[in-house]
Length: 297
Image 1 (cartoon, one colour):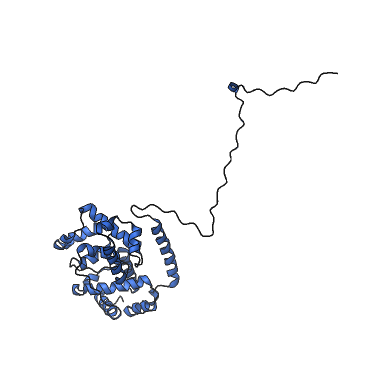
Image 2: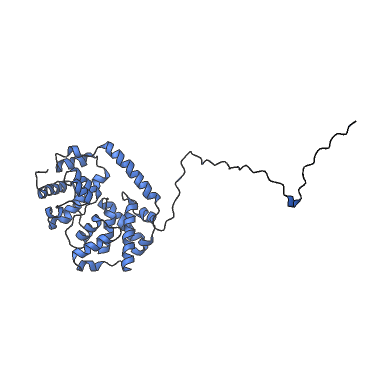
């Protein structure tokens, strides 16, 4: 697709996605803080489980400060419908901690009145935010033009040859905001996010392969192979296991569970050879008796 212009490539992508997905609009009733936290939940997930998990946070806890002081494990339990609830819980907690330490408040409505440039810089410095979260807040809450792209979406674009290796490394697709007009930004962003969530869930599904080939008929050789996926899943399991073993803020470290059918081997007691003790003259220890000589007959 190198001969096509960047704009025509993304226009064609938009047309393909419109046939397979339905656009999702951001909730206009949400505050800036709610958009920020919802973005932390939405990254890497479909809209339905993200909405369910966000509603769980709202209705389970008294306020956002209670969420801030709740353990990662308990937050992950509330957001169990997400693909990676612990990672989402960690993002939410870090954002709330960062806001509380800086402002002792969670009111961000003043950001709507500020210039967009300094606001974006401030959001990027918050603990727990990344490019996806910042772009979502800019688009959904601040009226700016930004297309949120999470890792799953970036991988799908890379397979379709719409993102270069440099784009993947930087986490930004060059020229995307220029190619997609602002009036279509929210619709395009929601459709693109659904593509990324589907790709992250199962990049080998026939439907996913069909969509990517419809976007770019020449990307067949770039489609992921299952043998590569096995290696990726093995690495992902190790990563998830490490994350699960890492205690959250205020959580005690847990010992790894014992292997089933295996008894813990006890170490034999170590015995030390005692050195022979010298007789203590102060205690009056008697010397050994000399045997008497036999008398001559």
